[in-house]
Length: 218
Image (cartoon, rainbow, N blue to C red):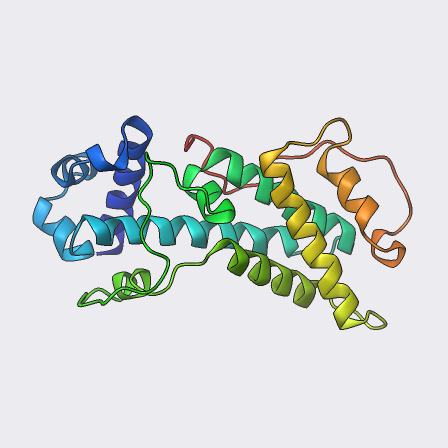
């Protein structure tokens, strides 16, 4: 029941915005989603299963935003800038993405172990959620590798491109903790990239919102 599952995950996130995860009740999540409590248990198995599924969805949503930022014919610097801006915006607007990227889980949040858990789920999506969840270092590697693959071009040394992409990812994560000042992330990204990736110099533009951010989720 994909639609019911998404509704239940939306309801769980909405409940998390109002109270700590420890105080979120399964019956309230089911009622808000408009389904029976049995449907909720059929999908997730337990409250811990719901927590893992919710965290997995937010991780997937963040990585889908990375793919959008890297897509298209824009220059490498522009696509890396978009990736960095998306990372900072997603972490700012989504408490679970921020926890996933930084490893800082507050007492208000569900904090499922990142290692895989024994799964008896019959629902394929839940079996995936019960698998390993990415740690901050995993996100650095995943985003770095996806960026390097998307930006690979003749004459670009793979090792140098990987390093440049990793620098941008780590720069974006630093902007989560300490937002940049005037010039924003674009100016910082251009400063750390080698000249062959930046293209002609031009004044930094203001960051533009990236579709897909879950802005109410703070």
